[in-house]
Image (cartoon, rainbow, N blue to C red):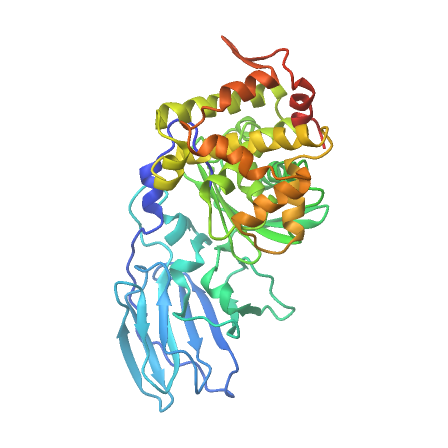
Length: 475
């Protein structure tokens, strides 16, 4: 998720995750046509335009032994489903408040309708539950896609979308069928329906983009060129793009002049990213945007599970400034000014609390993001000191990615120590955890020759000037 500059609507965004809407299945629906016994769950999704834009979903179950206990991961969008028995019977089933629905034995299929325009409450609340206009809609899979409550590694599903061009995290086969594993139903990512398309091709991968909604001052070519620049900045950190294919949805926000009010990456397989873009934003404002590259930089390392927010968000926050300087989009002085200003905002937010207290309680997003960014800076400098400026934090991310599709906190620490050639990770981290958050900033910046000045920062003389300069240098 993108960290905040001043004015970030934290409370509003916290409410996004569970914005509610209601849905009633369409009248007169019929069972899915009979066919040979399927070996997997089969989802047939039809995009409908009237009486409102919605997804009409039919699920053909897998015969004997098929799941019966289903769940909407983010409840509230559907309040009932229709179940059709093998004998042709039809039964209406309520969806419980936790999103669960239990189908009777010998159920052959279920159907329900998910409305995309349910007018959720709160600024940008529809980011998860449905937002858009005309034939261009954005929604999180966890809101509309029912799945078995218990998912086994062997579970398989097939999904087809009719009536609109969709941009889902997964790539369909030549017949337009998405062939999914059980985990894809649980971590289903962001979905786009309709809109326009472009593709950004990079060394090592490509980004498929859906533009959802109308822009006043930016055409699609300019939007995709801006996103390509942000994606290429990931290559200032990694040797090649981290995934062969990822998807990005650009969702126009009416009445907004801010280039990117909000963005988020969800760890579907492969990851999916969605960015809100201001419908009335001026083209020049996109050159100053930091949100897109921040979200794309989350891809620079595998997901760290269980999630450690200060580490994943701290890495992305730190590298957001380095990557923009390495690409030439901002000067090193500007990058240091952004880092120092972020540290200062975080110190004001958390006061004298220790880093351990801040990241454990998790009640300050500024504290979480920027203490993490300071630890990332400290690790980067310590690695360069330990290796004569021949290895750095970039190498840790490369090593971590080579180890597998997911990583743990211990894996990250082990990668730091391996690149350093000696124990280093905990030695650095303990200098932060039990001290007031961000207290280690002053001596670290002094050694790097980064000095506060009336105009922001001044790059003066410090013991580690060569390391400072290499941090921002092109890869």
